[in-house]
Length: 163
Image 1: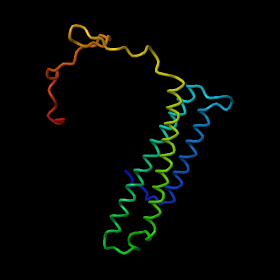
Image 2: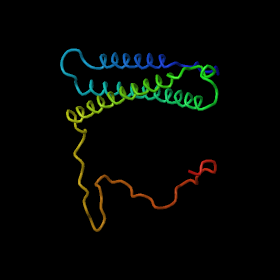
Image 3: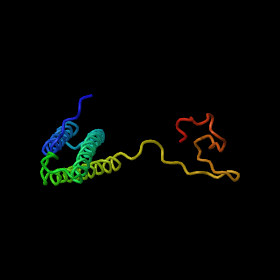
Image 4: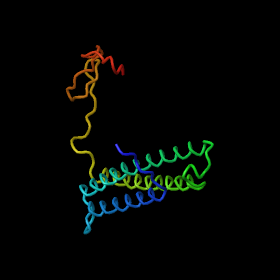
């Protein structure tokens, strides 16, 4: 496997901008241009934001690793020229990390708004939850579920992963 190319703070800024643009394009495709969005459209937009957040968090983790590597190198006794970065490099990476966190918070808020709107428009499908009924000292849910087994599991645990 080839070694990973060192990314600069500018590379991370560009990756963040690309992700923002891609999420915006995907949202435009998911939501109708004419008329109010249907529940199906809102669900598609929520899926778009969920995927965008996943990719954004991956970028944040990569940035965190880069920042930790910079901090450990700055803690060593080597001069700045040997480190390959100036004194403001860590600050630039941290600024990009803060920008990633701000975008993630904004997208999470939008996704929560979509979820709330979906719940408002489309309450849970099916019958309302049944009330548990008491018969002869035991509580039943009315769904005919098997009782929980207090006995030991059917197969022994693996020796390799004791759990």
